Length: 336
Ligand code: ASP
Image (cartoon, rainbow, N blue to C red; front, side):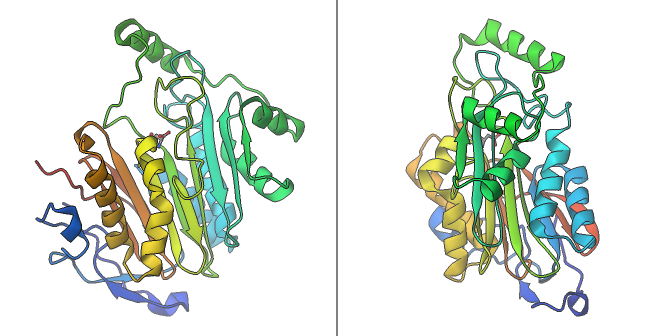
């Protein structure tokens, strides 16, 4: 397990500095009820702002967001531009163009964004538009509504200037055709096949925003909507407290309103790491078949202290802080 020790950089931030436990703690104890307090292996660390964190290994996305923050722009702008990098990457098969389709061969995208005021915008089950994160921002800023779905979302996007494009790349089409021959139209839940990009950022003013963008579970049933674009589940931001975002089996995140839970636990005094561990613990407690699916959370608090936790080995978090862009293996529950 890799440890991250933060560089003391308090004088540069002008904002509070938090001394606490390492972002990604190791522990021996597997009982979810004791996870939060099992932090004996943690190293001392100093958190600073600005900071950007994201689910999975997306260094170019966090680098873009960091660049935007360095220009003195808002966390919201950093989130949109950072998420757009991965949405435009046709090689990535879980976000934007190139995303794996539903079981009928259609690429349908979910995304949401939240700003420092707690405003929220989202699109669900939207086809043919490469940048759902940008459409979500428009929904938030330019309409009286918060969620647009399906055809309506696509038509709204086109009406404000987004271009229709085919999102199904040749390699994703081939993967779908192969799956179709073998899987009898049942959605597969592969614990390693989750790559939603959830991103959280704090800008130089100390304000927090977040975004989450995905093509959802590969080969999902038509019309299925996951957690990623749903406020409180795939993403939640409270500018007084912090933010959290999720990846993995959306149904489990939705049932436990995971990101909202993490922010509320931080409000009650838990560190981001402790809050992520407790949110995973809730899923494990109520869903005995957790061995068949993955869920991962990342979180940041107002001072820039970060945390992450997941069910199974394999999840990583990008963290850009103190001028360092690092992909960090995330500690996990299922050590069996
Ligand atoms: N959370 C996403 C969903 O359920 C999937 C993922 O993270 O890959 O749609």
